[in-house]
Length: 152
Ligand SMILES: [Zn+2]
Ligand SMILES: [Zn+2]
Image (cartoon, rainbow, N blue to C red; front, side):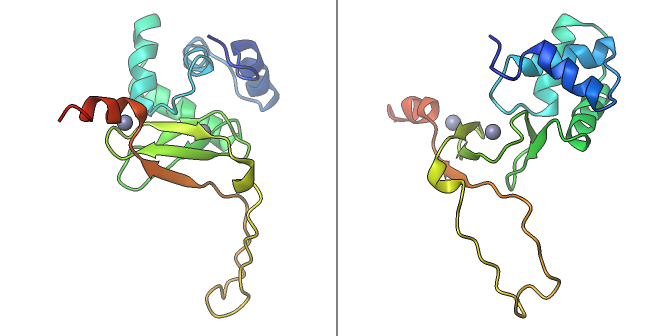
């Protein structure tokens, strides 16, 4: 159930070191996150958290997730036309995105981690854009969706 580096104790410890007070509600959110690798939306986390601790509002879950992002403990995964998803893996990695169900899975491909991106210092980047990070999204149909579609 727990994922290396993402167990509840480690997450709580990281939050406290970042000055994030771990309330009972935030702890429930962290506990939910620690067991999943599916890049949940705020709604998905909220749905599961309310099963274990009553009375947690969606706004509280959303604010907790955003606080974790602000403190560098999580990143947002954004794809055009899809809900914002959250990812505890803050190091550079890539994603497989299903066009049918919108699921997001991690893609470990070392060849994508060090792309030789050279920004020309010309009119296309007049403001001196500095690359901070990047992530490659590979779009397609996930195994689950291709299995359920193949009968049609
Ligand atoms: Zn799918
Ligand atoms: Zn990811």
